Image 1 (cartoon, rainbow, N blue to C red):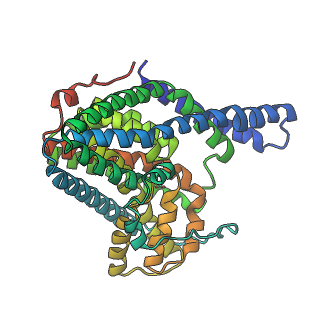
Image 2: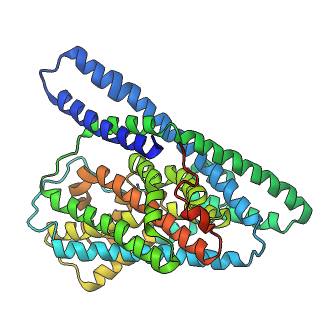
Length: 425
Ligand code: ASP
């Protein structure tokens, strides 16, 4: 059976068994031995441990892989001056797709009115997150200490440092050639590790989702049903209509093949709710399954995991309209523009980790003068939406990588067309 099939079975089994366990744990009549086995031994014991080890082993690869792979990509560039154009194209496309995403979300939310008539109690324990001034978000891109940047997993700083080292290696003649060859070898070794790790995915995914669903269940949906459906509708529209259209019109490549090859990476993103933790898998998918050359993929994928969050922007658009409606406040046309601008800027410099979208939502709400307490309304159902939007986030990163690669003639179209390329048995 294919790896995707195994992961899917693990997911379905985990959601069903996890939800069943949650129901059982709720019941006061449950025998204490059974409660101990289900809760302490499995949900909070074995499976929690398995899930944590799985995410840790993905995360441990992120910084070394991004650094090595990007240095490798840049130092072997024949024409380093093309780097500026490549970055401009990638960043431009990331901004445009995010702008499109949030506009789709705002239109859909204004039409479906998810917050109309909502009268919900606020979560009493909730304190709004502290926000970072936008200027700091931009200043923070430049590293002062590369070791600290790596230790903190600050992706943008690691990217900037890797670009500089890569450029210098490329210009250092025979010395650079020697070091460049080492980086190449390291890149192969780290990629191999990703491949090995992916074999454990079905177990890791089962552990993560079982723990989540046995503790939380689906959550209290109630008045939030229309909100959730609006977010999910906008995510599906963006993932399955906007991306394929953009891919086809900008690169001429088949969107069906693209979506088929994305499946594994999307499942990883869904289960971990973290684009950063998924970087090794996204990078492998884009390079080995779709044939994008390392010099584009190594730059575009990690950059996208940090600055391109279309799914997150969609949630923020719908949430802003929802909160305004729930508090019966009106948003003017300028407010909508402000929401679009802030959501685009706010996603730069925030790492792709679970729940970060809610923190940056605070920034958006603040800009248009909506009460931050509104976040407490939607926090209960955010985790499941987080999983879905993370899958959209990494799909966007990969789509842009493929489009940029095509325009740079940095994609092997035979590999792209071959459905079996880079597949794991
Ligand atoms: N979890 C998302 C990601 O990693 C970010 C968010 O929307 O919270 O891409």
